[in-house]
Image (cartoon, rainbow, N blue to C red; front, top):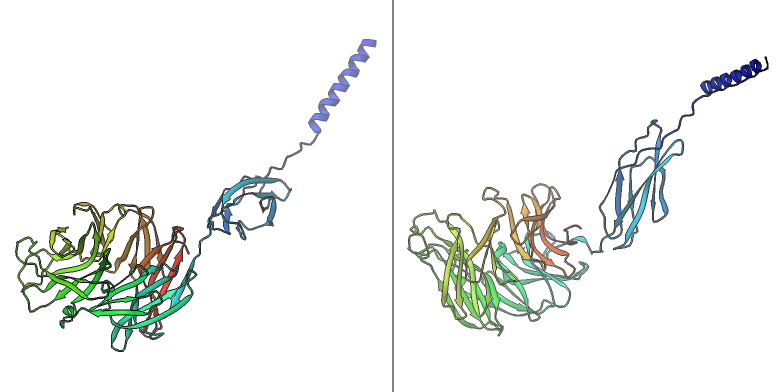
Length: 486
């Protein structure tokens, strides 16, 4: 009997324990939000922008967000899913985390890191022409001068047509001076060129060659009277200078009364503008072997004591009664006395008007037509060609190309009514491209200077639309970082 009661007691205890387990309520655990996905962009020298996706909470609780940077809370319990870091230091590594918190105080943290960029001066500034605040004109060239300042030059509308102007600004874009000159200039970019040579400015425009000091004081100007023959297409287009400071001026001499309607011309002047010699050039380097009707000299460079003249040639060899000319890339190499060494044409099956000759650091040359570019070696052999814009894209063109210190190519020009500039590799393949739009105004890029820190300073012509079909031009300068941002 004793054993019976003991067994009964044990059975009761076990049964009660099992009943207690069954009846004990289950405790549910509230889960934290999911880890957020984020992106950091628009990183500059002093700011960065971070954005993130919504965290998913398993129980659909409300989620708030906090952001910490370098151990300091910069955003707390916010509904926002973005934040802009400001007042940062340049070239510094930063770390932090995004914290997602639900209504039960459960948290999930996602760490992040980024590095700020180097500081670059950037700006967009506008300048009026010297003669009038409302006139027509163009910014054609920009130079970085040996005194650390910058010179913008081109043409502006005057009562008698167009004339040369110069505008000098400092590193920060502040105006130092602007001056107009009694030097006629055609309203076409290739007819104006300026360079700094040995601490002086030499420029060519229309029929004139001039020399000035860095303060814009005119030292002398020379009228090349051969060009002044009554035909508007007769004009100086460019120049180069030798080791003795002699000036070689190239251009196009037009005369429709002649069998050859346009000839190339080279004029050699001494450092004070006095004549040394002058020569005119035609060509029979055509498909038929007959004289070419049109030969234009557009640009020139001096290398190994020889002149390389660049332009375009009508290679069709048609008679003077036909208007079906076909201009091809053309180069002529001469000695410093103007005697021809060789002449060559390129891409004869197309029409390519010569625009700019660019010497590369390896001694080769780039020939540009404002829509196409080719590279040739010192012997005039073509290495490669790249079409940037097709002939059908008649409102798209580049006005200037420079080779950067890294060997890439920088183009600047326009597409439609927008200014554009872009960086390519050594063979013209695009790395990045930027636009400047400001509707209803019309913008065209014309020239560029690369700075020592690999940033860029760009010259544009800005046609401001005042309504009622009133457009007046201004000079616009954009200072960018190495990636074209401003």
